[in-house]
Image (cartoon, rainbow, N blue to C red; front, side, top):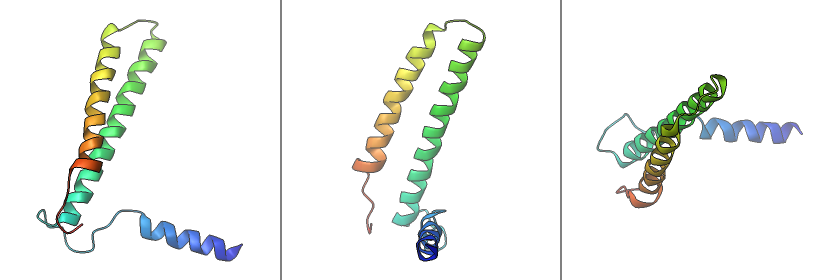
Amino acid sequence: MFDILCELDLTLRTAMPPRLSSPPDPNNPEYQLLRDRINYAVHVALFLCVNMVLLFLEQFWRVQWPWRGWLTLVWAIGLVAHTVWVFWLTKYEGT
């Protein structure tokens, strides 16, 4: 049991937080990949937070905002486009 916990601990230490193997250089493909993935994570977090707050306020105040659905739809389409861009279309030299 202790061996499994130690192995898990080592796995978590190597995976998080994401680190660069060299000093930051905007021309480094590893840096560009990490930058794009972090920007994507921020985009997802903002999408979830803003939509949850709007949904909460809509339920709390018992109002209906017809624009909230459109905002969520348009933003979700942008998030899907960002996902495709970051994970499938963008190629970095050397990665």
